[in-house]
Every structure is written in C-alpha cells, then in structure tokens.
Image (cartoon, rainbow, N blue to C red; front, side, top):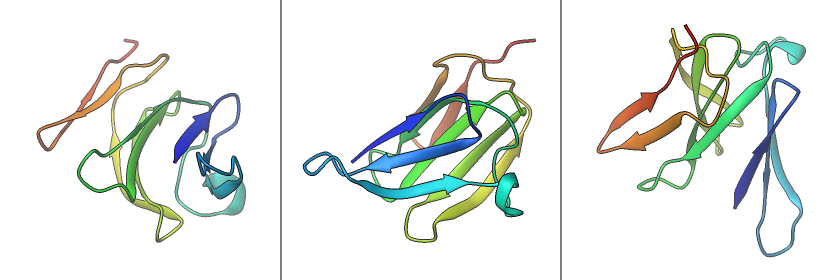
Length: 98
C-alpha cells in the first residue's frame, strides 16, 4: 500500500498492485477526529502495516489505524510544513515550522 496527502485534510491509501483506493482517512469535514488543515507528511509504521502517522498545518500528528478507518491517537504540537515526519525505534520524530 501507499498513502497520498496534499491540499486537503485527508489521506488516501491505495493498493500498490491494483492502484485502487483502499481507504480515505479524513477528519473534521466528517465531524470525526483528524486533521483540520492541509496534510504534508505521511509515514507507515514498519512494524505494523495497519498504522500510519500524518502531520500538517493544524499542529497535530495523527496516528491512524487502517482497520478502524480513523485516528487512534493525536499529538498536539508540531506545525509540519514539509516531509519532516519519521518513525524510529518506537518514537515519532518530527520537524516543526516555528
């Protein structure tokens, strides 16, 4: 699978073989928790392929579970304005525009 983010506060996850949309992860537009502004960075967890993290302009990092179709954790703080998100050894690493 691969994930795509951009101008919207959503993340689209596609199947790499078929190139078909698997799940659309969105938040505030549907009234559910999630991003409120543009998403700049998405990173899959190397240990659990069902988890991914995302970050953007809304100063949150969202931890998504593809099985749930929504975020399972949210961290407030970094304003991510580029590809500055990584997962390493159980830690979430971010850059922040501040």
